[in-house]
Amino acid sequence: MISRKFEYLIALAKERHFARAAAICRVSQPALSAAIQQLETELGVEIVKHGRRFQGFTQQGEIVLEWARNLAADCDRLHERLRERPDTFSGTLHIGVLGSTVPLIKMFTFPFQKRFPNTNLRITIHNAFDIAQAIEKSSSMDVVVTYMDSTSHQYSHSHILYTEEYELLIRRGTRFSGQKSVSWDAVKQLPLCLFAPDSPLFGAEESEILNNALNKTPHVITNAIWLLMDHVRSGNWASVLPRPARIMVAADNELEAIPLPKSGAPPSIGIAVPRREPASPLAQAFFEIATSEDVLGRLQEVLYPAESKTASLKTSPKSKYTRVASKS
Image (cartoon, rainbow, N blue to C red):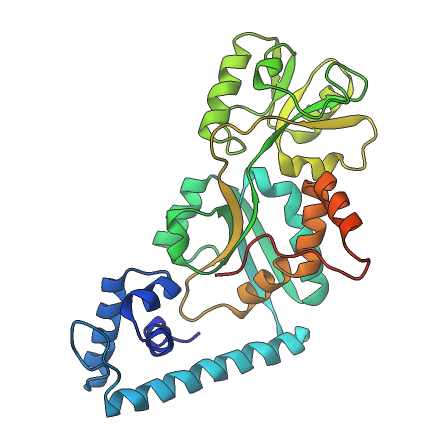
């Protein structure tokens, strides 16, 4: 809710260095300097002592800085009071997600809805390009679950959840069952039931691999996950799905998910809140719940069960999972 210009000012006071302040705010140094100059024009006073390097604040600048810090503290107190009163939250939160992340979204929405029962959620599936365009050109998305890349400077908060990986889905007891991993070449040896390789579920490299596989093996293409799983469950087909799909098959004793090799450097997928003025308390609350230790711990257990089991043996029962990555 606090203006970005005041956030820049507070960061500059903390770092006392333009480049470091810009890095903390995830903007370029020229953008930070221009915003402060614009603030000076709007207020009609000189805020920063001008020079090639940061030399401190003017007397008027110290007054503006104190006001900005008070405003930031007031905003924090407002968010805290609202979080203490879930019944005061209402409205609809718009969430844009990648198709590959759909199975894990309930891990965020269930605790959020329990905490804030009077809110509504509208969740839509998009590819990464559409999410980036929506963030840049409109305010149609309050929270996104997407790739964390060069667009991250457009987020007020972001947190990496996991790296994108894929798995071969088969019926237990069929070919490759029990193996710790399977090669992409092995995929071409199996009849496949797949989502279209050019769907938002797959990255560019995986799409190319699967398109080549479809030229060499009998296949079924569908856009229905339950049809896909029924075909795999029959034992006559296999499939390839993003790792979050194991959330859907975790309790299914008939199905087995086997990791496939990473094709290149796997991109990171995370949750983020696009920059908005004023900021959305609902979006902030959703982000905090989604990145809480309890939720991230459960996410780790599902996505990386072997690692989680090993970690639990090395820690005391009272210890908690650490976050996958720190918030920005």
